[in-house]
Length: 64
Image (cartoon, rainbow, N blue to C red; front, side):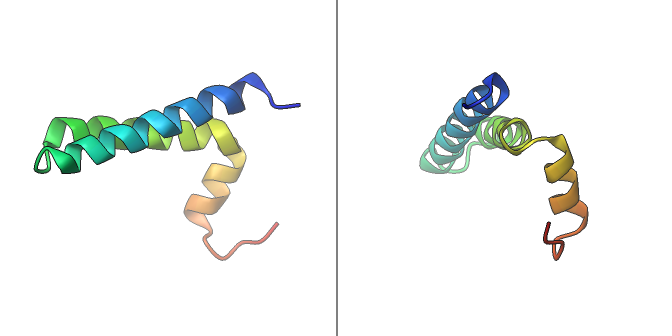
């Protein structure tokens, strides 16, 4: 069963990718790129969880 946070995180990840793509398509529009970054990182955190996000961010070679 998939939790609600994972569903919301997946949606935010998708929106982040869309905004990043549109930011590049509109000749590197800074507002869309910034919004895409925020949505992507928020979605990633909600999808994999805060603990795993912090472990991955601060310990790239860590295997659990």
